[in-house]
Image 1 (cartoon, helix red, strand yellow):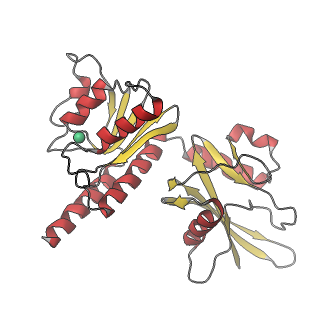
Image 2: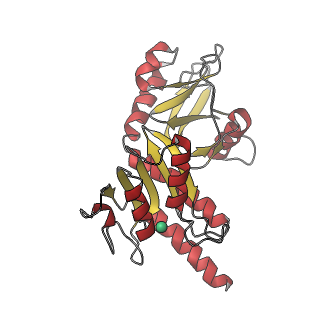
Length: 280
Ligand SMILES: [Zn+2]
């Protein structure tokens, strides 16, 4: 049976849809992102390769959404896999129908998409209801790359109006700076990008509960909301040891939600410190 991989990139509640081939003979496909599986690859590998080759996008976290089988009168059979690409690096520019288009689910009516794909998109849209997890996955991706560089794996993104405007991982080793925490660097990044010393209306996502220094920076930057992953019994200053971001004596307070995808953040930290102990 032939396998067809269909990738779906999603950002800011929009999705990337590909061109519909005129000569296609099966009902369920978008031309891209996705395609043939080559020898030695699994379906997710094939999607990663195609994204890299065709859009120059490095895909990180890929989740299988659903699979569909199609059969035809002539005996032809296709196995179609739909993937959600939850995190990636790169830039996706195309916005014209001839190539690829960024659309919201409500805009889909304007495009010549197969009915089967509309149903998939509806399903996809529901799966993305939880924005907090989506941005935490982006922060986790940064934490993972920190670990690869020998840095304590903590990642952070700052989000405004659904767009990531600041991103960083911990860089205390590289910069030889005890204060180069992910939050400090991501906040500075966001301020630079907005050309503003305040981050009103922004949400900060970080994989580990902010320390007192970072909680202080959050208050000074007037960040509206903080979402963190694992609680930090050694330095947590939003809920665990202190509640600085809720302290009424300070001139700003941030809403806090802790424990989002905490297991994954915790796992990264444990693996990192275990490997470091083994090396010593
Ligand atoms: Zn900190």
